[in-house]
Length: 141
Ligand code: HEC
Image (cartoon, rainbow, N blue to C red; front, side):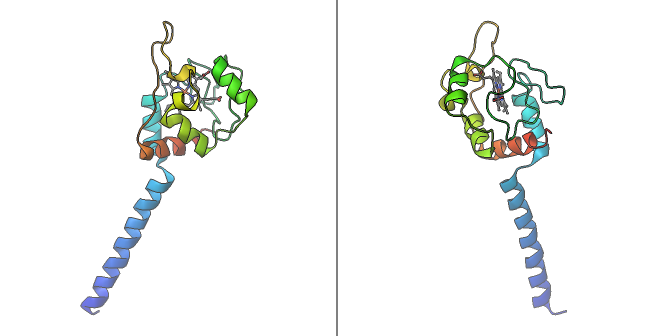
Protein backbone atom coordinates (compact mmCIF):
# COMPACT_ATOMS: atom_id res chain seq x y z
CA UNK A 1 0.00 0.00 0.00
CA UNK A 2 1.28 3.44 -0.83
CA UNK A 3 1.90 5.88 1.97
CA UNK A 4 -0.77 8.16 0.48
CA UNK A 5 -3.36 5.39 0.84
CA UNK A 6 -2.39 4.72 4.41
CA UNK A 7 -2.68 8.40 5.22
CA UNK A 8 -6.09 8.70 3.64
CA UNK A 9 -7.29 5.63 5.55
CA UNK A 10 -6.10 7.24 8.77
CA UNK A 11 -7.94 10.43 7.82
CA UNK A 12 -11.16 8.53 7.16
CA UNK A 13 -10.88 6.72 10.49
CA UNK A 14 -10.25 10.00 12.32
CA UNK A 15 -13.20 11.70 10.67
CA UNK A 16 -15.47 8.80 11.59
CA UNK A 17 -14.29 9.00 15.18
CA UNK A 18 -14.83 12.76 15.37
CA UNK A 19 -18.24 12.39 13.74
CA UNK A 20 -19.20 9.81 16.36
CA UNK A 21 -18.11 12.10 19.16
CA UNK A 22 -20.00 15.05 17.68
CA UNK A 23 -23.10 12.90 17.35
CA UNK A 24 -22.87 11.88 20.97
CA UNK A 25 -22.66 15.53 22.09
CA UNK A 26 -25.54 16.39 19.80
CA UNK A 27 -27.83 13.64 21.04
CA UNK A 28 -26.80 13.65 24.71
CA UNK A 29 -25.24 10.94 26.83
CA UNK A 30 -27.76 9.20 29.11
CA UNK A 31 -25.03 7.79 31.37
CA UNK A 32 -23.71 11.28 32.11
CA UNK A 33 -27.31 12.44 32.39
CA UNK A 34 -28.06 9.84 35.04
CA UNK A 35 -25.25 11.16 37.24
CA UNK A 36 -26.35 14.74 36.68
CA UNK A 37 -29.93 13.81 37.55
CA UNK A 38 -28.92 11.99 40.72
CA UNK A 39 -26.94 15.04 41.84
CA UNK A 40 -29.29 17.80 40.71
CA UNK A 41 -32.84 16.39 40.73
CA UNK A 42 -32.83 13.35 43.03
CA UNK A 43 -32.98 15.48 46.17
CA UNK A 44 -36.51 16.59 45.19
CA UNK A 45 -37.77 14.14 42.56
CA UNK A 46 -38.41 10.41 42.51
CA UNK A 47 -37.22 9.03 39.17
CA UNK A 48 -38.25 5.41 39.58
CA UNK A 49 -41.28 3.51 38.34
CA UNK A 50 -42.74 3.70 41.86
CA UNK A 51 -44.22 7.10 40.90
CA UNK A 52 -43.97 8.64 44.35
CA UNK A 53 -44.08 12.38 44.78
CA UNK A 54 -41.33 13.91 46.84
CA UNK A 55 -40.77 17.66 47.16
CA UNK A 56 -41.57 17.74 43.47
CA UNK A 57 -43.74 15.46 41.29
CA UNK A 58 -42.36 12.09 40.18
CA UNK A 59 -40.42 12.17 36.91
CA UNK A 60 -41.17 8.67 35.60
CA UNK A 61 -42.38 9.02 31.96
CA UNK A 62 -41.81 12.77 32.11
CA UNK A 63 -40.73 13.17 28.47
CA UNK A 64 -43.81 14.13 26.45
CA UNK A 65 -46.02 14.07 29.56
CA UNK A 66 -48.42 17.04 29.65
CA UNK A 67 -47.28 19.62 32.23
CA UNK A 68 -49.03 19.60 35.58
CA UNK A 69 -51.31 16.59 35.06
CA UNK A 70 -50.09 14.23 37.78
CA UNK A 71 -51.80 14.26 41.15
CA UNK A 72 -49.38 16.59 42.94
CA UNK A 73 -50.01 19.96 44.66
CA UNK A 74 -48.50 22.27 42.04
CA UNK A 75 -47.94 25.93 42.90
CA UNK A 76 -50.64 28.41 41.79
CA UNK A 77 -48.20 29.90 39.24
CA UNK A 78 -47.48 26.50 37.70
CA UNK A 79 -51.14 25.45 37.66
CA UNK A 80 -52.21 28.69 36.04
CA UNK A 81 -49.76 28.32 33.17
CA UNK A 82 -50.48 24.62 32.63
CA UNK A 83 -54.25 25.28 32.57
CA UNK A 84 -54.21 28.40 30.44
CA UNK A 85 -51.66 27.25 27.90
CA UNK A 86 -51.23 23.48 28.21
CA UNK A 87 -47.98 22.04 26.86
CA UNK A 88 -46.02 18.80 26.78
CA UNK A 89 -42.64 18.28 28.40
CA UNK A 90 -40.92 17.78 25.05
CA UNK A 91 -37.21 18.44 24.64
CA UNK A 92 -37.63 22.14 23.91
CA UNK A 93 -39.78 22.80 26.99
CA UNK A 94 -37.57 20.67 29.23
CA UNK A 95 -34.50 22.50 27.99
CA UNK A 96 -36.03 25.90 28.76
CA UNK A 97 -37.32 24.77 32.16
CA UNK A 98 -34.05 23.19 33.21
CA UNK A 99 -31.95 26.14 32.12
CA UNK A 100 -33.89 28.56 34.35
CA UNK A 101 -37.21 27.44 35.88
CA UNK A 102 -38.00 30.84 37.41
CA UNK A 103 -37.76 32.63 34.07
CA UNK A 104 -40.07 30.00 32.52
CA UNK A 105 -42.61 30.15 35.39
CA UNK A 106 -41.98 33.01 37.81
CA UNK A 107 -42.76 31.93 41.40
CA UNK A 108 -42.59 28.20 40.60
CA UNK A 109 -42.00 26.14 43.74
CA UNK A 110 -39.05 24.42 42.07
CA UNK A 111 -36.98 27.61 42.27
CA UNK A 112 -38.13 28.77 45.69
CA UNK A 113 -36.91 28.27 49.19
CA UNK A 114 -39.24 28.03 52.16
CA UNK A 115 -39.10 26.74 55.71
CA UNK A 116 -40.17 23.19 54.84
CA UNK A 117 -38.55 23.42 51.39
CA UNK A 118 -35.06 24.79 52.09
CA UNK A 119 -33.58 23.91 48.70
CA UNK A 120 -34.15 25.84 45.49
CA UNK A 121 -33.15 24.89 41.96
CA UNK A 122 -31.95 27.74 39.80
CA UNK A 123 -31.07 25.85 36.66
CA UNK A 124 -28.35 24.01 34.78
CA UNK A 125 -26.34 26.56 32.83
CA UNK A 126 -24.45 24.16 30.55
CA UNK A 127 -26.35 23.25 27.40
CA UNK A 128 -24.32 20.04 27.06
CA UNK A 129 -25.31 18.98 30.57
CA UNK A 130 -28.97 19.71 29.84
CA UNK A 131 -28.76 17.53 26.72
CA UNK A 132 -27.29 14.69 28.74
CA UNK A 133 -29.99 15.12 31.38
CA UNK A 134 -32.79 15.04 28.83
CA UNK A 135 -31.23 11.97 27.18
CA UNK A 136 -31.47 10.28 30.59
CA UNK A 137 -35.04 11.48 31.26
CA UNK A 138 -35.99 9.76 27.98
CA UNK A 139 -34.94 6.41 29.45
CA UNK A 140 -37.47 6.75 32.34
CA UNK A 141 -40.30 4.66 30.93
C1 HEC B 1 -35.34 21.96 45.20
C2 HEC B 1 -36.17 20.87 44.73
C3 HEC B 1 -36.14 20.56 43.23
C4 HEC B 1 -35.04 20.27 42.45
C5 HEC B 1 -33.59 20.21 42.89
C6 HEC B 1 -35.57 19.98 41.13
N1 HEC B 1 -36.92 20.11 41.11
FE1 HEC B 1 -38.18 19.84 39.52
N2 HEC B 1 -39.76 20.42 40.63
C7 HEC B 1 -39.71 20.76 41.97
C8 HEC B 1 -41.01 21.23 42.40
C9 HEC B 1 -41.36 21.70 43.80
C10 HEC B 1 -41.84 21.17 41.26
C11 HEC B 1 -43.29 21.66 41.17
C12 HEC B 1 -43.24 23.08 40.64
C13 HEC B 1 -44.44 23.96 40.99
O1 HEC B 1 -45.47 23.43 41.45
O2 HEC B 1 -44.31 25.18 40.80
C14 HEC B 1 -41.02 20.65 40.17
C15 HEC B 1 -41.50 20.40 38.89
C16 HEC B 1 -40.75 19.79 37.88
C17 HEC B 1 -41.27 19.41 36.59
C18 HEC B 1 -42.71 19.52 36.09
C19 HEC B 1 -43.38 18.14 36.25
C20 HEC B 1 -44.81 18.05 35.78
O3 HEC B 1 -45.44 17.02 36.10
O4 HEC B 1 -45.31 18.93 35.07
C21 HEC B 1 -40.22 18.87 35.89
C22 HEC B 1 -40.23 18.33 34.48
C23 HEC B 1 -39.06 18.92 36.76
N3 HEC B 1 -39.42 19.49 37.96
C24 HEC B 1 -37.81 18.43 36.42
C25 HEC B 1 -36.68 18.55 37.22
C26 HEC B 1 -35.36 18.07 36.84
C27 HEC B 1 -35.05 17.28 35.58
C28 HEC B 1 -34.51 18.44 37.83
C29 HEC B 1 -33.01 18.26 37.90
C30 HEC B 1 -32.25 18.85 36.83
C31 HEC B 1 -35.29 19.11 38.86
N4 HEC B 1 -36.60 19.16 38.45
C32 HEC B 1 -34.78 19.61 40.06
C33 HEC B 1 -38.62 20.69 42.80
C34 HEC B 1 -37.31 20.47 42.37
